[in-house]
Length: 264
Image (cartoon, rainbow, N blue to C red; front, side, top):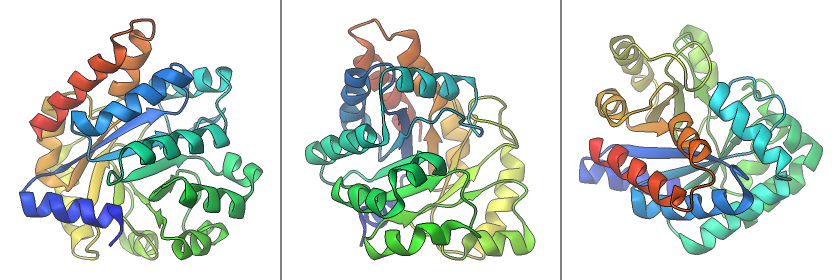
């Protein structure tokens, strides 16, 4: 089994839900993002998403947009993101690593070169926000050959034949976007998500992790009742931004993640 499959199996056997944490590569500094990434597993993160900075992150809200721009100003690149993943993998052999971002930087870097480099860096999955199922033949066959999961996004409006299309070829887990909007803004309607989750679960055995709008331990605890994992990004990125000049910033993030992990 892949690291993603293994981790979800372990969580299920333990009766727990998974915590997925997001950090933008290179934000608030090259060293700062590296320091935070490498404390996350001990703090309770079950999966780690590393954001690949992009100049036009259209699905992201203000906090992650700003983090992406700061990272680019700091000189972060696709190669730099892969290097961060490689360092994280060397320090944490079993923690699943997922890269999340947009297709333009991957296309510019070179699709085959990117997939090969991602595999060599220990990456387990890819979430490419703006690459729909109709177009992911651009990279999915290469990724599957090297054991990298293509994690698909599902939204509250993904229903009927569209849901079937999204599920076809998905692997690893499903990323459920809990709101119709951008990251870190509105709060989700848990009752509506629970209804949709029943439909999704009737069609696939893949675990489902819910993201967007989950900020506090209370948010995480409530959402964990209807899914297999919760994803927290903007709240962590905001903590890093607000404390970027504080040498205790990594420890502050660690405490934040511990509270989230305890809540679920």
